[in-house]
Image (cartoon, rainbow, N blue to C red; front, side):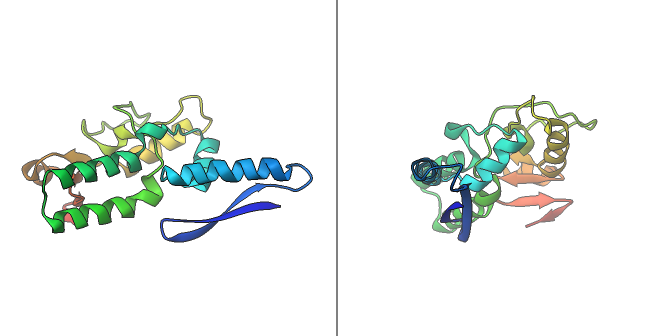
Length: 176
């Protein structure tokens, strides 16, 4: 069995690259190199493989992790306070292992019956519609990521569930 051991999100991980008689050493090395390229783009190769099996589209240029990195650079250029930058980096790092490789797009309509917030975080995740898991994933993502993306502190206070650009989250009237 060919395996590739790597570190992602501060954790050691192992990626299976295939069995010896089925996959040659050259093929295993190419698979390892592909995994290294994903790591350079801050995409977890094992998470990527799982998502591909589930049918979630990975838009390499528009992943949550890459957009978060661009945003961190932007607020750094704007001269935000060091405490704000530290908090934002901490939040982006916290979300990276679970959301970093998800593709981001403008908007999608959930299969659930309840209406989602117009600025909900769920609209920034993309699922392939032809996936056999589409309905289930759509319901789960709508249930778990229905947080309004608040632009101002007043908007944050008005919402029941919200997340700010600085990383502050609020769910069920409890700020964190």
